[in-house]
Figure 1 (cartoon, rainbow, N blue to C red):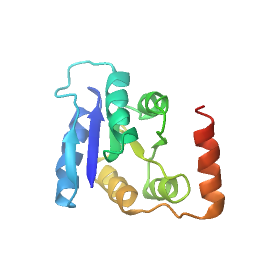
Figure 2: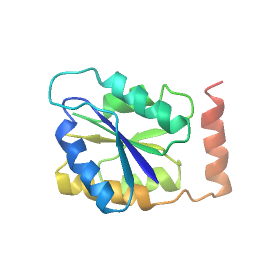
Figure 3: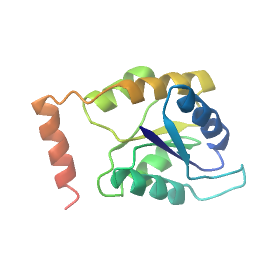
Figure 4: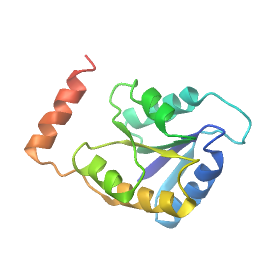
Length: 145
């Protein structure tokens, strides 16, 4: 499975750590930038990652200072269900109940170890496929039309 990464300047350092980590977990990592801590606009990276995810190329992980901006931008792309997670419980819930396909993380408020635990839980948690959750996701997707 491919994990597609994007970050702004505030998430660059954590993105670099997580790219290595997902490879250690056995995933392929694709990095769409940024490539430094020079100031950039996060919507550009959220959009490029989300477009690839929406096309079926893998799951997305976005990192900025708070995770909020990345989630807002990513969810503008049809087919994306982006979430911000700050602990393992919220990461698992977002996949089990909401079939999230993009994860946003805070480069400022998470340690490397916290972020790694969140990423591992999120990547390894499947969607429950419970009818009540599937119905709700269909309703979310219908909002895009």
